[in-house]
Structures are given as structure tokens and as C-alpha cells.
Amino acid sequence: MTADGRQREFMTTEPDDAALVREAAQRGLPGQLAFETLVDRHQHWLVRLLAHLLGNQSDAEDVAQDAFVRAFLAIESCGDGARFRGWLRVIARRLAFNHRRDSRARARYEEESGLPVSLARETMTGQLGERDLLKRVLDELAYPYREIMVLRFVEELPLKEIAEVLEIGESAAKMRLTRARAEFQREYEKRGGRRGDTGPA
Image 1 (cartoon, helix red, strand yellow):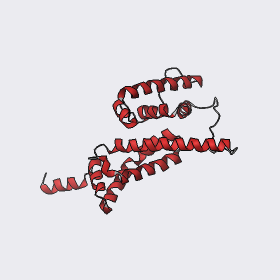
Image 2: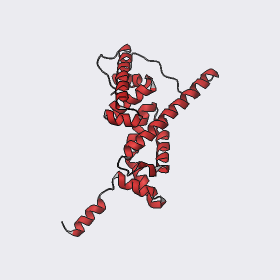
Image 3: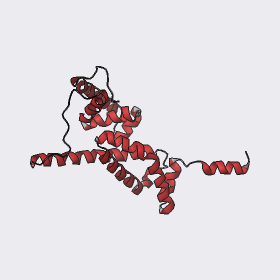
Image 4: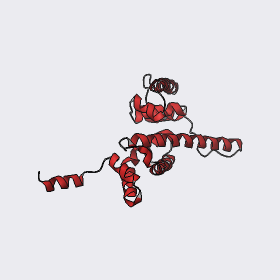
């Protein structure tokens, strides 16, 4: 290959996350453009993750936007940028937890005030399909269990990375996952699901 050919190949190769993070950390217009590329690259999976954690697409999009804003403001703390996705996942996970906690506080206030709860859960019926049943059971798990089930079975992360996202030790993550799977199975079978299906679709 000629020198010109190598140059053209280099110019058409998309920069990796590390290069974009380094550029974004320099701020200015080039930094903003680099970060916009990171947003385009990571937005889809992040919204999907948050939709599973929060059970609401609109909330997921709002929290994802907040996560990207926080990430941009703190981009210098991302290190060399090689693990941008994992770093962003930790930020989003903390925001999702806070959002869910605040939402529940608002719901309790509405109930205690005699106001209608805007996001009341639908009644379970026998007409739910298998996938709907799996999602409903996942939605009704205690948040720490739901969170680790999503990271393991939706994001398909290894235990070591799950522990990093949750900021706990691997043994603690393993124990939480075991308990979450057991709780999921109990609730699933209680609603008529098949024995042995221990993870969401």
C-alpha cells in the first residue's frame, strides 16, 4: 500500500473512545464535537439499560441525557478514556437509583395526599404473554435485585464488571445475584411461569 493509501485509510478510520475522551477533555469546539460522537456511539445501549432499570422509556431518556451531561462536565476524571463505557454506566446507575428513589417518594406523597398516583401499576392478568410476564416480574423486584439482574442478563456483563459498576466486591456481587435469581424465580413461578427460567428475556 502506498503512503497516500495508508493516509487515506487512517483518515477514514473512526477514532476510538480513548481518543475521543482525550479530545473532549481539551474542551472548546473540537472537544464538544468529540463528545457528541461519544453520545451518538453510546446513547442507544445506555437508554436501553436505563429503560430496564426504570421501567419507563421517557424517564430512561431523561436520565441518559443527565448522565451524558454529568459525564461531559467530569470528562477529565475518565482517565485515559479506554473504559468510557464502564465509567458512563456507573454514572448512569447512580442517577437511575436516585431517580427511582425520588419517584417513589413522590408517589408516596401523592398517595398520602389522596391524589391519584400517575404511574400506578396495572393489575396482573392471565392474558400476559411470556415476555410480558418476565418483564413484569423484573419490574417488581426490589431495586438492588432488579439492577443486578439487568446488568447480568440484559447487559450480559461478567461478574467482575458488575461488581465494578455496583462498586462492591465480587463476592458480594455474586451473593446478591444468587439472591436476585432466587427471588425472581419465586415471583415468576408464583405468577404461573415455568420452573427453571431464572433470567429475563
